[in-house]
Image (tube, rainbow over all chains, first blue to last red; front, side, top):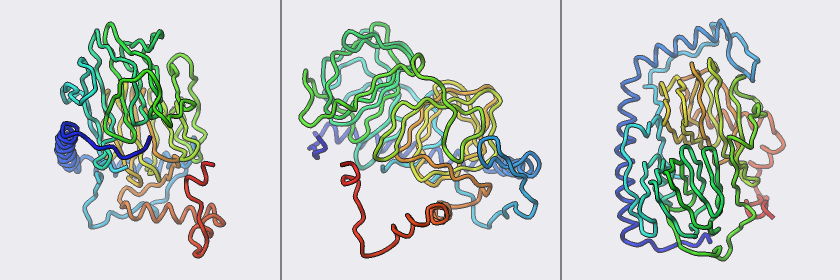
Length: 83
Length: 289
C-alpha cells in the first residue's frame, strides 16, 4: 500500500476534467462571496453590537462584554473570505 | 492536503454525473464536492441506483462512507441511514448491493476513486482500523470537550479519531436557536456537509441542506447561528483547536502568527524545544512506533 501507482489515460482524463470543473466552482464561489460583501458588512456591524451587549463567546457558556475601544478598526484592504 | 477553499457550495445546485472511472460497476452517480489536485483524493455525494451490485473488493485509498438515505447490503448485513464506514486502504469488503437505492457521502482520502475486485485484502492492509457503526442508533450525542468549546447546543458524535494526527470524523448537530458570537479558525483543514438543516456563518451566509465546505487552516469563520437546527457530517485533518477571537478583518498570515504566539504562551517548553536548533525532532513515523 502507499506505493505510487501509474494512472491510466482514462483516469488522468477524468481527473483533469474534474479539476477544471472544480476551478469553475471556485471562481463562482468567489464571485458570489464578493456580491455578499455589502450584506456581510452589515452583519459585521451587528456582530460588533452584540459582543458589546450580549458578549463575546469565550468558552462554552462563558461570555465577555467587549469594550468599545476593543472593537477592531476596518483596515483599508479588501476583506477576503475565500482563499 | 491540496484542496482549494470550497465554501459555501450546495450539491442541490448541480446534477449527478455517471461514474465512469475504470473498475466501478454501473449504477453509481456522483457530485464532486472537493478534489485534491495533487493526489485525486476527494469527497463526493454518491447515488447508488436501485439494483446496484458491487463485487467484493478494495481500494488503494482509505475510504469513508456515510449512508444518508436508503440502504445497502454489505455481505449479509443490511446497513441503513447513519451507518458510517472507515475502510482502510487495501481492506476488502464483501459484495455490496442495494435494492431500493442509496444516497451516501463518500470520501477517498489518499488517491482518486479506485476499485479492485478481490476476495482478499491487499498485502499490507490494516484490517484492525476498519470501522463500521450506525451513528444514528448506536452512538450518543456528546457535549464537546474541546477547550475552548463551542457554545452550548452544538453536540458531537465522534465516528473516528486518528491517534497519530488527531484528525477526526464526526456527526454534529446544532439545536434550534443555536448561536455562537465569536470568530473561529483552526490549525487544521475542516470539512462539513449538511445532511439536514440550515446554518448561518457571517462570512458565507446560509448553508442549507446539501451545503458543503472544505476549509483550509487559519480561515476565519463565525459567528454562527441556526434557527431550526442542523444535522451534519464533519472531518478535520488534524487536531481541532478553536482559536476564538472577534476581529473579522484578520488575514491567514495574521491568524497563523496569532496561533504560534498562543502556542508560545500556553506551551512555552514545547514551543522553545520546537524552535530550538541543533536537535533531532521526532518524525511522525517515529511517534507512531
